[in-house]
Image 1 (cartoon, rainbow, N blue to C red):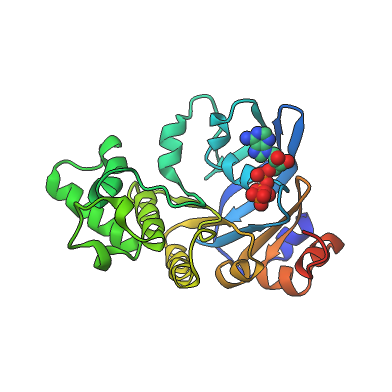
Image 2 (spheres, protein in one colour):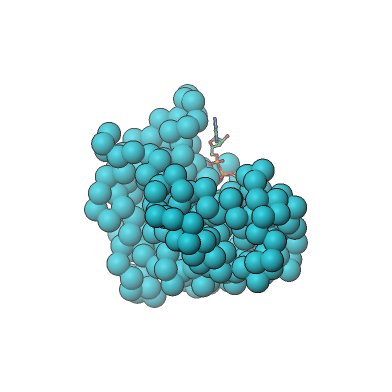
Length: 264
Ligand SMILES: Nc1ncnc2c1ncn2[C@@H]1O[C@H](COP(=O)(O)OP(=O)(O)OP(=O)(O)O)[C@@H](O)[C@H]1O
């Protein structure tokens, strides 16, 4: 692992997240086994690996979403910008504003398009008045690459949009609180190829401002959108490095088997 980290010169951004010896247990299931990783700032990092290997579990460690799962126990150390996110003084709600999340299935609130995006900035006291809030909503919808499609129907329900539009609305909602990191758990798995291409293009733009970590079942997607890839297998982070290298010249035979379709 250490060799992989130092050999990986493809992205030179600073480290945003460090994880050391992270383990996750769900009751008697040991889902994550001693993961060490450094995730770079303003970079797309993909988590790949066979079903059940722990990708989503590890992703949820990064904004303490596992706290909400009864019986889940996370140990080890995870730091964002050198600060331990599991320190008891950290408020998980504030943390999740800084580390936004987009889920597999688009999940807009049963509210208007405007209110979906305005909700987070409102509860975090980001707007002094209505004009401020309007500006925040517009900026987020633009960053979500959906402004042009919704600007004339901001007060229509978010649930009335197409699946791909709903997912971009959810991305706009996630970026509205000005997070620094965006976690995406298979964000395109419910989308058709056109909507998938739009979201992938958006992910590419988002990396200018955010660290993006994406769980994907599609190796093609990982290759298209990410600069770094982590391959998980049976709860271990087997290999982590520059995406091109992972897909063309992996070090570990398990990675090789997975990318060539022999496991998974
Ligand atoms: N809420 C939970 N309660 C108990 N066990 C869980 C829970 N979530 C995940 N697990 C277990 O932890 C392990 C890792 O699951 P996880 O969903 O993180 O894998 P994954 O790689 O994201 O899988 P997939 O690609 O199928 O989504 C599996 O054995 C799974 O059954």
